[in-house]
Image 1 (cartoon, rainbow, N blue to C red):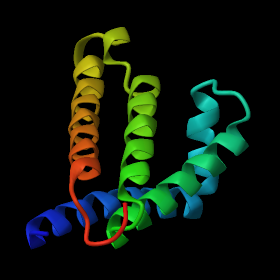
Image 2: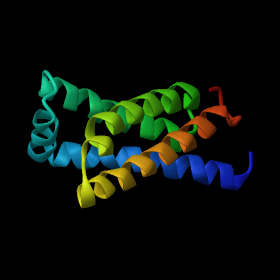
Image 3: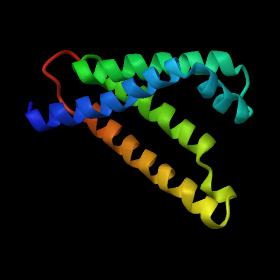
Amino acid sequence: MSRLLVLGRALVGVLFFWAGVDKLLGWPQALAEVAGAGLPVPELLLALTILLQLAGGAALIAGRLVLPAALALAAFTALATVLFHDFWNAEGPARHAQLIPFMEHIAIIGALLMASALPTDRHR
């Protein structure tokens, strides 16, 4: 496989792996964000989020189980994007401030879908 494809997949993996590490190290702040969104059982949801981000990110970096990792991360990102970046409910500068990360997450979902379709040197 092209080194550029491997690098691209790994970089998307690093994004998620680091997000999991950041949430784990900053548990109180991350928990406040989840609880602030009004989601039920925020401790459990945060723990599952961290697990998915660490495991999914590591899988993409290593090139192992790429298809299920990329699809799970894409679904998670789509859900999180709708829950946390609802630009359609904002007005003025706040709307733009939510629209930018919303669109960035859409691009990340696209990268994950492309990564899921790429052949790997190992079993998917």
